[in-house]
Image 1 (cartoon, rainbow, N blue to C red):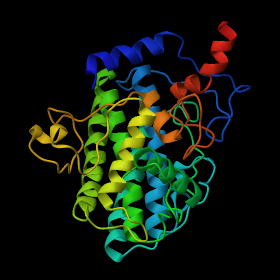
Image 2 (image 1 turned 180 degrees about the horizontal axis):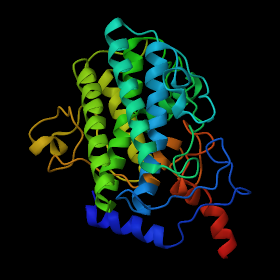
Image 3 (image 1 turned 90 degrees about the vertical axis):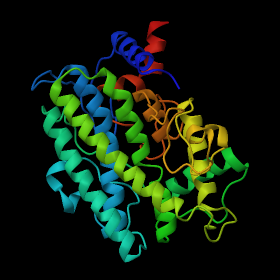
Image 4 (image 1 turned 30 degrees about the vertical axis):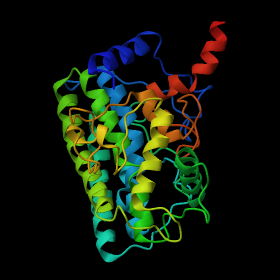
Length: 332
């Protein structure tokens, strides 16, 4: 639970130590081949835009997953103008949702369309700054692999049969627990580094809605926290705790909490119920860009893509991190 000053210093040092876009020849990131670069302007600094690029990767993921799960199509139908030729998500399909959850997640999908539009408008200079849709893998296999990692971390064994988020409303709800919260902590981590007025306003607005989405998802799960998730022996709370433990492991920090926690880390050390994830002062946790990527890649290493981003995320920061090993070899 580092301070915001420490977080800001860490990212600033990282940027000063050589944050630069890789060349077209070296790239092939996010399924595309772009020499990423942003320019200051419109009351935003270059760093403001680089941090917004991190968020743009996550917003593509959320938009595609919420839209496909709820209505069976994604950005190519809902907002093709935001795709800009980026590759279609792998394994996307409609989930078997109740009318209630279809409505909830369709609303969230449309909210993400607005987020994408707002971020890409603020970034400008396509495709180098406001880049096209990132290559995503939201297939059943990737979700099953993610849940197996989570249950190995928490309970020492994989799920059998394999987890399929598209099978029913409860499993899809549980899968969405993995999504807005990472973005939320990324926005919290970025906020101390922002300089321009428009960037601060944008991130504050995005953080507000991402937090709301996370609260809705956690509340829906908390209502059913003691319910067993068929056909498994585990409860909804067990799933949340396993996912949160995995994300902490991947982030190499304690920045994530499940729905039920030991009393000593509950609010004011008085409760075990944990409807919102927050630190000892009930303040939201923060992730650095490297922690965000390490988490969503499922590798624990921002230089090694995988999971939902099989070819890595896009943007200047992502490109530098993905080429970290190669850069280190050149420096030797």
